[in-house]
Each structure stands twice: as C-alpha cells, then as structure tokens.
Image 1: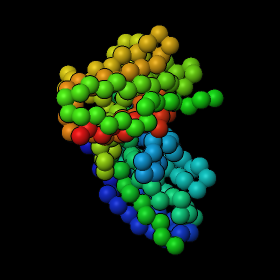
Image 2 (image 1 turned 180 degrees about the vertical axis):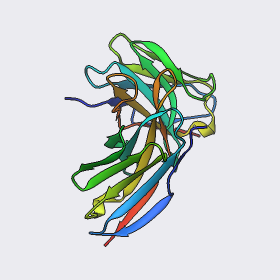
Image 3 (image 1 turned 180 degrees about the horizontal axis):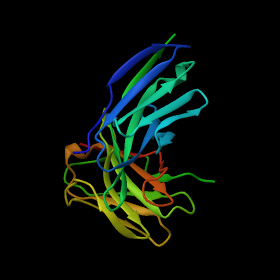
Length: 111
Length: 112
C-alpha cells in the first residue's frame, strides 16, 4: 500500500511553535508535499521536498528524510489564521505521477 | 493570471442522477488531475490527464469518467449518483504530472 500517516488533530497557542509529523512508506515516492487547507476551501501549496534536509520559507519549514520515510512541517510564531488542516502528500511515480494524501492534521491555534 | 477555476462551486443532486463538473487549468498547464475529498479525509486521486490522454486512474468505479479538451480544460462525469458520492471534488493543474500541482476551489457536491 501507499500509507501516509499523520496525527489527526493538534492544538497550540498563539506565538508558539508546532511540529506536524508525517510518515510514509518509502517505496515509489519521489518527494513530499505539504498543503494547507482551511475549512471548505481548496488546499494551498506550502512546500515540496525532494531531497533530504530542511527547507525554510518564512514562518514555515519542512523537513524530509527519505531513508526513514519521515517528514515534518514546522510552524513558528503561530497566528490564529494558521488554524487549518495540514495535508501531507507523497508524490508517487507508477508510470505517471500522482499525489497520495494523508488524512490531514487539524491544527487549532488558541489565544 | 487566473488560477485553476472550477464550476459549479456547489451542486445538489438526487440519487441516480448524473453530474458533470468542469475545470479550467492555469494557462500553459497541460496536466489536469481530479481528486475526491470526503469530509474529514484527505483528497483521493481519481484521474489524471495530460495532453488530452488519460495517464492514470484511481480506485473508483466505472461510474466515474473524465476527459480533457484541446484547450486543456477538463470535465469529470459521474453517473448513477450515490449518497456516498457527496464530497468536495478538486481539480489540480500542473505543467506535467503532479509536480507542484495547483488546486482549484473545488465543487461541493451533495447527493440527497
């Protein structure tokens, strides 16, 4: 199978740092995406990691370890507007490329 | 530049009916993928089209079909609707494959 696992829900307070973990089966994956999705809206692109290591983009950073099948999204200086679902998606190549999504992690930021 | 546009944004249908959902990709993007997102779940891959050819299909019944037109826009058709087809249907476009796919706002389909 092509399992992507991430926690269902997390809570954090405004101004804090939160790390959302994602694990996946390594076979066939060519990279790892993170998307943000507010309730009732479409996913919006946050990051794409194809090589091991940390990618930093403002308040958001994403890490990938291909050998361990592990990624995380780090959100710093949390704001109320960061309350959303965060989707981890593996780029799967089986003759064509498709995204395989986890169920998403719902993050609730409280004052 | 316009992003990925989908129509309609909301739709209510009754069981057994047929539905057609439409998607216009970002200008210059030749690949369109369709995803179904049931409430509380991540999107599930349905189809991918590139240069008007189907490149891949997910684990969905034959009631689901799609096509891509010469202008790279796409339609998703679902026949004999079931209550379980109620979901947000997302279209994603990219230059090729799924690399850096950009999503439309989705079509919220409710089957009653």
